Image 1 (cartoon, helix red, strand yellow):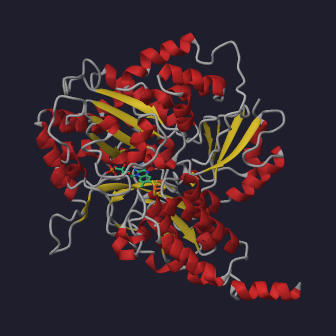
Image 2: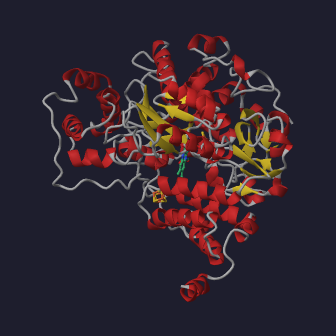
Image 3: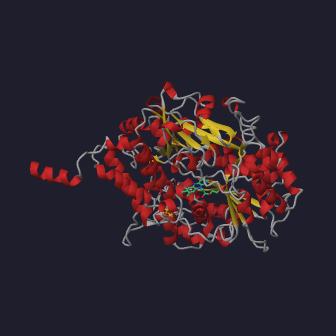
Length: 174
Length: 458
Ligand SMILES: Cc1cc2nc3c(=O)[nH]c(=O)nc-3n(C[C@H](O)[C@H](O)[C@H](O)COP(=O)(O)O)c2cc1C
Ligand code: SF4
Ligand code: FES
């Protein structure tokens, strides 16, 4: 988690005209989120969640904009954002598959399930399919050990998975 | 032994009282109709300090892992000074094998909100943040919905019946985490709440004195707070009629194991799920009466008692009594979250250890060298033992590395937080209790001879 190596200072940041943190988003955050905390920096996680919810990932330009909004430095924000597994500083697929690989799930067949999904999508955990549809990740316990093995696909939890039903679930996605 | 009636799952159909298929979200009207917020009403008729004393007397122990008495924690707060004081609700639930808080968040969120309101009154806390793990998408939505209902019904907000606390009207916010196990550790949670990486803080100062934003802060687990309403409503004697009292001769400063508790059981059993029982229930009873026995009639081999951090108990401990003393009795870390993972005779304990080491090596926040490096090395060692490429001396090395990390004396006080203690106990208890499985997996000759041989062969 804390091991993401930062790009060097020579990195080129891709920029676009339109801000990621647009006025509408800023207004919402200013009225609904900022007042919750005694410091602006404390709104970091909600702000990053909001940016990611809108854009699917958090580009560097968005980090800079968020830093300005939170009245902190971009490096401070990068420090925070890069610590958390759920913040994407690189683009991901339209569907993010987070397969639980903790004990209860492994005891109940997660490894075979993972092999079948890898074969089906032709990717390894951490990779995205060429068409940009799926990103596959293995993660720690999802808090649903009674219905192991399980996986989150975007915000939806799928439980009691088998090679067959999980394959069908993925096939059914647009 | 069985509870007369469920308390935490009163409104959540759960065997033996109800069928999980009948579960639905209890909204605030249904909650009121079934005796909800009675505990809060009672608390509001009492002086804040009297509520703290009552919870202290009940000896309610934290349900988040460490088992620290809640009333005692509450009484550590300094006197009010008119400035802000916080409640941070720990809904991070990321300990592998743990899914009990989710049940409450999914179906009966007001049980938690009632506990929060009582705690805010008792401890004079004006703002609460419910820190919920990022992966609980649905649960966060449910919680926000319930919090809204509570605002509309004057539990929180500018018209709150609690009135002003520290000169402010009480507020309650849902705050989403972003996928970091360490943010379940109370001070990691606070750092995260402040918008930083979730690096655990060195204690003291304890959060009750200087917590969120440097102000006095109480941190409690979801289930702990959910228990507070029923305690106020039904009383201390009722609460203490369940569980395991202190043995004779033990001083009253040592907390006992009272009250009902959620047990989440998963693994090789027929009916995994959350079951409510009093503390002290035998694991065999849980497996046979609630969980429909071992899967495929297989034999019991081992169990993780309360999330992977607590380590394992062995084949002879099938009847283990699950209370806060489980650690001392069966040589594991403790009751933890009471998330029991049951493993049958076909389980490969080397693989289990490797799985656990992998988790900790990924989740170590990296501040302390013994934890950051140690968890990683344990994962490497276990992976190679699992592949059949380990050496006999690796087993002792593994044991030594595990025993060198942790904030507790068993980890030589070498780290800041308890994550390393979890890694230590999990790996050490597996190696100790199933050493033969490791021995049959490793190459018999010492590494130096192996390399001499390979040189000669070459
Ligand atoms: C690495 C680590 C992770 C933890 N994760 C959680 C968690 O997810 N939920 C929780 O309630 N407590 C967790 N705890 C325990 C908390 O630090 C703290 O003791 C607890 O939230 C206090 O609440 P309680 O007294 O009501 O149990 C964790 C502890 C450690 C060391
Ligand atoms: S023990 Fe591990 S997780 Fe805890 S503070 Fe140290 S490095 Fe971080
Ligand atoms: S172990 Fe997979 S959800 Fe808990």
